[in-house]
Length: 114
Length: 115
Image (tube, rainbow over all chains, first blue to last red; front, side):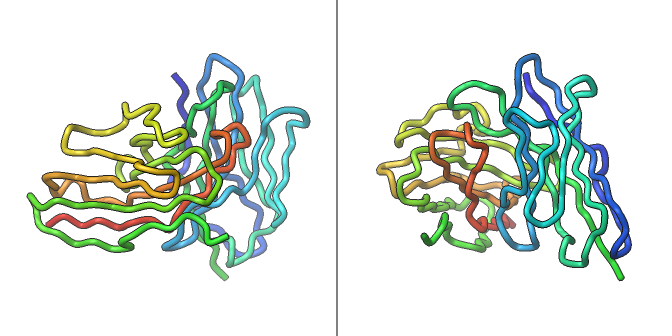
């Protein structure tokens, strides 16, 4: 069965500092990997995804994630965070089969302060 | 498009009462998902539908929970009778062609408190 482990439940950082949110997955078959973001009192929104091709994927607001098959990881990074990046971030995995829903990690709360 | 619409946004009820949560997916989406979010367990998939048909309900915690999708534009999640441990935020999400593209569109959630 697939599973997702987010290694940090909370990550506090100062504005303009770099950040890495860690995600490891477990699956015996090919996977699709995702990061979703949840701002306070809102639903989740897709941030970026890896389906195939280049192992480095980027979002429009400066986040990037790299798929590492040997380490079964999909860590999320940003070189310089803003106050507005404060949110909860969820890593998710989907097995490469039709009709399967996403399995989410427990989330990492990123808190950016000035 | 209006996005996924859930109601009510907040519900406070007493133990033993029936709770009905509602969801309107994005028009044209053929998959609908119900998730539950708690601090302890994170986001759990409860059930999902394809073309109004339940595909996998293995995440439904017990018989007190039931979900229906009578048509392509409406789904309900019902808890009867409710218990304090059901307190959580319940999210509905919809997508086109399952999760192959990876993008589920989530509603803003229904926060349920059972006293």
